[in-house]
Amino acid sequence: MNGDEGSMAADLAPVIQHTLITSDLTTDRIVAHARECVEWGFSAAMVPGSWVREAAAELRGTGVIVASALDFPTVGVTTTRGKAAEAEELVRLGAQQIDIGVQIGWLKSGRYDDFRNDIAAVVEAAGVPIKVMLELPMLSPAERDAAVELAMDAGVAYLKNASSGAVEIANEASIAYLASRCRPGVLVKASGGISTAEQVRELISAGASLVGSSAGVGIVRGSGTAVGRSY
Image (cartoon, rainbow, N blue to C red):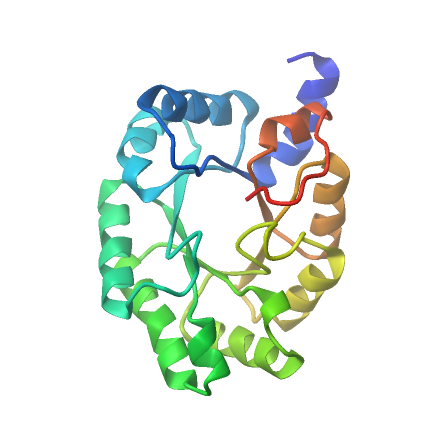
């Protein structure tokens, strides 16, 4: 990287969780992704659960953590027991943070205890920071408030606005809303269509502590372009 790229990477990379989640991954691509995360100094390599072991082996001792996601990209389809068991397995394989889908349908059905207990089961099983993908555009204002409070009651470490750009392009309003509701010790991660340095700076200013993006390198190089579906 040149001097300008190095300056921007030092500024933005530590808050970016660089994401590579797709169905056609190979060992070579995962290894390259992990090395890219080290080269640019990203916060984490976000990879599918089936590739956590390989990413963890490549990143051991580098200071870059391994993150993964479950009940994703289709959110809210996994049973509570299955989600908890998978979380435990991901940690055994080397995941140090996990982003999870939540049961939006249970929330909308008024099953608040089930919604909270589903998240709490993962928090307990994993023993690592859990981030909840709240899918804010799918919720009414009252449902948003309930989801945030129930997720924090369950012990999550991070609130997320959405799972991807297919649900919401991360924006200052959503992030500021989450930041305003956070209890002490709970942080905000922005996700969805984040692909430029300007977006990252705006989201951090609004209250995000982390951003997730599959366009990490383009962001820190200043060559990113806005897209709609990036994770």
